[in-house]
Length: 224
Image 1 (tube, rainbow, N blue to C red):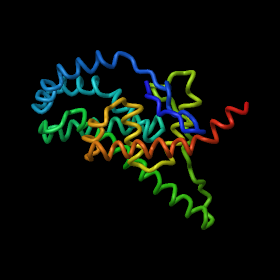
Image 2 (cartoon, helix red, strand yellow; image 1 turned 135 degrees about the vertical axis):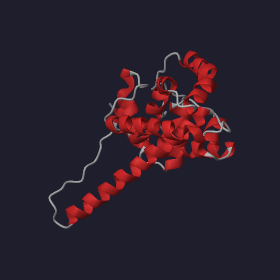
Image 3 (cartoon, rainbow, N blue to C red; image 1 turned 90 degrees about the vertical axis):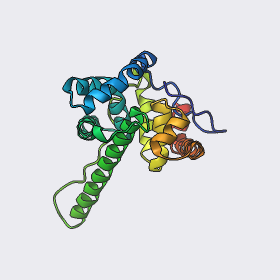
Image 4 (cartoon, rainbow, N blue to C red; image 1 turned 30 degrees about the vertical axis):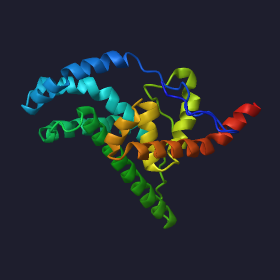
């Protein structure tokens, strides 16, 4: 469940009750109990341990990635890339941070890299169009199914994700980890390799910017 941002004096309420996750506490309790043993077995090359790691973490990875790239096929492809990297580089995991923190970092990095590649392709397509090429610039509309979004709130969630694309990257990542993934500020600070207070600042600025972006949407809804 997304935690509410709260109200601006004359602005919208952002992200309240848009997401609905099931049995998270139970699942993560299982993860914590099995994680160390699974990682050790994976580092020793045991294939069944890799399958267990994928089963335990694939929802977390996919949900994080789709919140950033906002395209289901891209999110599926990047999720596969993440686990390929996990398999190839797990020997370098020393346990200095939690495994989930390491996994979040890989997921976010790959999602942001995908966004950069997509933007470069759009710029190239736009240049081609300027010079008379037949190709059309391809944009991905924000129409996708996030696994955590309650059906009745898909319209609001769509507007929220659209607004997230318009705010600075670090604010978007902090907001996604906090309000969608449900992590606390200390966990976010560790994943983003920054301080607790920097995360607080990023979230505050993200909320302010999202309220600005969503102001027209909520004003139009109130008129209807």
